[in-house]
Image: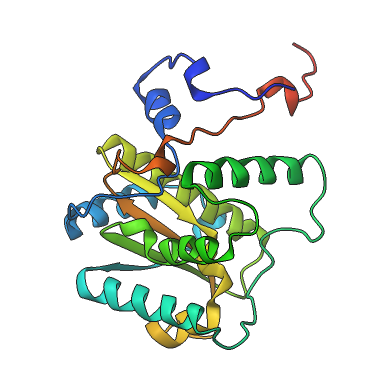
Length: 235
């Protein structure tokens, strides 16, 4: 099944236009984003569906010196080898299987191609991880957590909340990147930010203005069209 690009779809209204314009941005300008703007985005996002209105999301939003210190310290620990992390949750199945492994490999090598990273260039790969751990230079970095006693229904709610942030940000001229990499460092993140053991680190999210000079931001991913993942009956 051929992937469908956002450019192949014509939005029927402003809401669809915003959804289709959302991309994971991997290079940001230093332009500040105000606390008022972040608060507004989170208030809007919190209107996400939530089973029995439990609202399981918890956010630690960082900017300025607290953000720089956190990113520098986390990156330094990573480069030094650090201690082994006990991952809070398994983000992907292992081993990964088709068709998902092919999709993951494609975006990985497409991105590395734009960054000029060839297979086996471990130093460049480590440098890119450090870039990840600095939220790609975004002026706002969020660490997203959930009480570890919550089950899959609340995690589904959380996904809709995160999507709301991304869409609300685009509507205000901002860009985002949801970042699974932070789930790989729960121990150091808890130590640096004082996050309790009872909270699972779900992911991170960068918020800011796209730096159009960054090559990684030219990446446009495909999507399988509805006919490729939907069984229609009665139509």
